[in-house]
Image 1 (tube, rainbow, N blue to C red):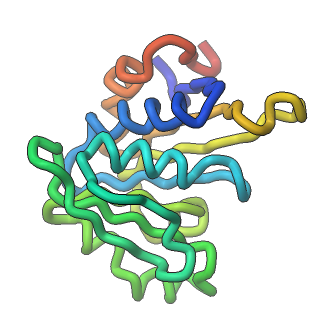
Image 2 (image 1 turned 30 degrees about the vertical axis):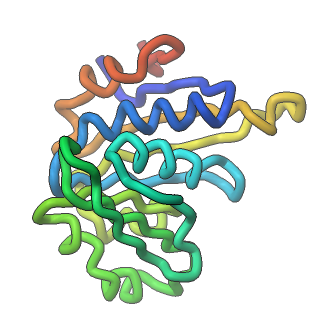
Image 3 (image 1 turned 135 degrees about the vertical axis):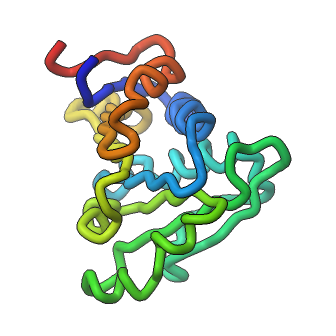
Length: 174
């Protein structure tokens, strides 16, 4: 198989389900970079991911707080979900000051919105989840194309990733 794995979502619920499938594969220290324009569904994805980990309560974008930590439910593959939004950070040194990598090392997983900005400091072991709104205005309200690319420690998990995503997935370049 060859990365990326691509899934077409026709609703926010399907986007949340894709996120939940990926959450089931996570290990302590994993980093997911969420990429997409404003309104592409990064926070919807984060909500589905958090729900699958048993996070109680609402999950909203940490745009102004930058980082939120959530305790995961019993039976989750990790104890803590770190949800970051680096859109308002001004530089890579400011992102380094957040210490995102250190916060997930022991028992957590990180979801970083605007992940393309944080990629240079997060190392090679990342799963990039890109969400794109279709060009057709009729589909723009609910449909999304979700492209998933694993690097480093995620490289060997492509079959697992494709397996949890179910119908509607395809490999690019196959």
